[in-house]
Image (cartoon, rainbow, N blue to C red; front, side, top):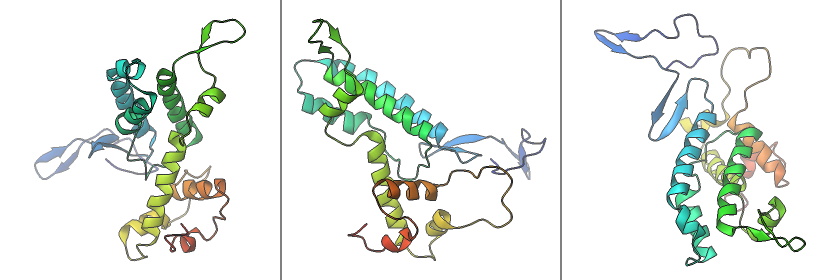
Length: 212
């Protein structure tokens, strides 16, 4: 796989090293994660949601059973269905919306319908009612919390570490025209602003583990 802004007409040609031919691809799976030539996390989120849906339907009878407490059902969701490994995701608002929609579907199955006081008919829970029942952070807040924790860990590694350079480094050359690609650091700064922390000196703030 070649990661480049400008890929010529030879995009689909294979790579030959001596007598061995290596197929050129735009994406592949490495250690269970999707790696794409455009360095986008959208494909990874789609894959995780597919796996989450498969797990959800496999335990759907447990989530709707009256013999299991709601507390245990939520524990099944958090441990078996909730996506993990999201510390390095650089998400867009559309990606976060997909995660919230998936979680809302699972929680509606756990909490079940509600009887309308006016009509007496059963109906689906509204988002506000569901949020009032679910007193834990939603999937996006969990992802952002883990992302900030991971970013603080990398920031304390020091400038000589390769992972630190990948997180905050700047590539050589001139930036092309158009809107810049959303970076992991952009997500970190946005997450900090949401909790009321000034993001200009976030690397300095992260050095204090307790404060971070």
